[in-house]
Amino acid sequence: MRTAKSLAVDDITIQLDKVPFSLPVAALIALVSFHRQRQVLGPQLQFLDHIRSTRWLRWFLTFVVIKSANRFLGRMARNNGYYAADPPRWSRVKGKGDVVLITGGSTGIGKEVVELLVKKTNKIVVFDMAEPTYNAASGVHFFKVDITDPEAIAVAAQKVRAEVGHPTIILAVAELLTTILPVQVNNAGIIHVAPLLKVTPASMKKVFAVNVMGAHNILREFLPHLIAINHGHVLTTASSAAYASVCESAAYSCSKAAVLALHETTRAELVHRYKAPKVRVSIVCPTKVATPLGEFLEDKSLQFLFPTISPKWLADKMTTTIESGLSEHLVLPHYASLLPGLRFFPEWFRWVFEKAGSVHSMTSEARTANTSSKIYTFAKTNFDDRTE
Image (cartoon, rainbow, N blue to C red; front, side, top):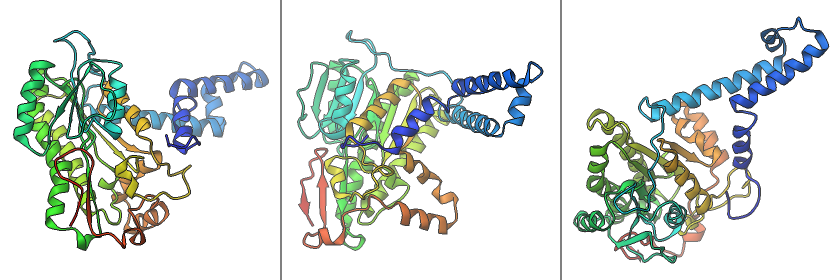
């Protein structure tokens, strides 16, 4: 998961999920335990009696069953009552298969997603203001586009449809992913590092222009086709800041909360207004990622529990989500999955959690004392880095 090659708690929980905490393995453990006990007590021992009389086995099976039921119900809820997956239809034949649109696909997380998906399809479209930082393969179609400009998006969209096809998968690393041109990835991102009272109206507007309006502009242009065919996937990249804000990130945290709301609205309207329940809508809310955007977040020593996420690891999670053909709501890494439920608990619990888990705060006052409020843009728009 991390840039450093050391173990993190997520590595352990992933393996536990795959092996002992899966229903088939749990059932096998119960059968082995029953068989061994029956050899001691004789054939009169019944399976259910063994489970009732063996406390550790009873609690273990209860935990696995509840966990599996929760996973099943969550899958049904996220996918509008459909259990069956609707995976991408990859094809290298022109005019066939899904088309992937990735906003912010030249660097960072978007770049890692491109390098994974290009192994599957030659229909990948990248919208970015910066040239790709990699040798774009023949299957990658780059368009220099400012996602804050709806007219620029409309012009580029016409070229994309004529040259590649209709995107069905949109991937926004700034918060929106779809695969196969009915799939789009929205990764454009901008962050304003400054204390609250130094955040100017102009800088707040710039952050929202990329992180929120940029994602909305992409949806307005490309979502109608996904609705028409009732197929595709929109994957938005938000942030754990949407659930738990940190110091010196007022504009960024507010924008990510707005992106989360945009995701939820999109999901609801696809079902209740546009009658396209099979269009998948996913969101990824990571904590600190080892990208230029994440350099302004501090690391603490407990990396085993609070790891810094590598772009490649996160990109793998995102592409796995796209290929699954299922809607997902990922809050990563493992400890961060508690964040969405924080508002359910009393204020004192949230206070304790923030004290114990404020591992990735924004840059400290000491580090920013000699700098004015600053806007950092990462190759997503025509905004230059500048002080205000």
